[in-house]
Length: 540
Image (cartoon, rainbow, N blue to C red; front, side):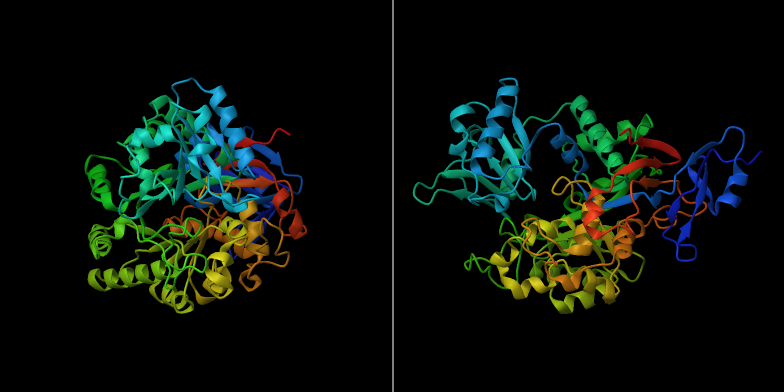
């Protein structure tokens, strides 16, 4: 057969994501694209002598997941360093750092992260004295799980030149001992950069190892595309992506977003000849309005309940007043997309003001402004997002963590519109899902489970934290597939299983549409295909 398929899947239960044909039994792939989706009988007609035919055995097949917010290389480096995600107390934190220090060469920086004191039996923030006795000359630099706080030992603080006389940077804070004024080792938001900039950069080989580890993790998780927050770091991050693109070694599609205060660099790359392809695209800009609720730097309309002296912080990118609007308007005139991090209700309000002003100034177009996280919203701003066509780029995995402690910070009433997924969807706000990896594990089924149950890690909300904001399972899957494609202007190419779209799909161990909700997190990816090639196959 001249037009035979290269690969054919049959005897499957396929959720296509397409309203006209939501379910199918089989699909055929030629090259990197789907050529047909339908019933077994008709699709099998496309088989030729060289067609690879796969009997799915009735398993569920879904479009490949699209993660709307990753720190992909950071996640890869964390896979190769100290992971503190399972630490539950001070003693375990110290023991983990001690063991890692014993494993490393004497001159190596001890890096890693994932710790969250809010999940510990005692919630005190780490202090440099915890580890100084066995890391005297070795810098220790460990991000908190939200990436807005970092822990540094005394050696790392010396490396950064941080002492009792160091002023807090704009948009950041150096925590200090109340009696001595000496730094405790905790750095918040922009204060983290004071140390980060002094650490030795990884080698190109280390970068390549981190990217490969990140891609392997994504494929095991059924993630075929990521919308990344990509740092320049003297161009090392970008050059790593280019190396893989040029040798056709990318196995996951990357939509790379870079910092808004350096927006001109993207234009320069275009002028220098960079061209998007199906594997690596420049995805516009990422900016920050405020910090995080966990670090007490989310910018709120009213003071924190547990810290009434503060309403949070605006980031350095917002200062001086008006600079964010100026940069965003210029980038928008240049045709660049923009997505901005906003956590606090005041931060979201200010960002919507800026979006509205830029649109009025530059005129209508399909710009798809995005709010990353859109975490704490005033009820009236949900309606504004819909009216302005602003996308909610949200990460449901945060609900499981934040729901354990958010009410201590801002009270129950303000939490009624925290992670308001159902309200956003019903208001007509485009919704996409992701993880914020490595803040949350790169596992879509954990996020889907949380979106439909809103259960928290402490087990105290079996019926869901703010249960009126639960989603249906189909809404959650759609936000992770078609919603993600729309967020990156890619809905004509991917996000659903349809003839002529890219052959990005997964087969999973159980039918998530039919199993009890408690079983959702147990779902395993059996096969991941990206661009018509099987990139991962579960061997268990």
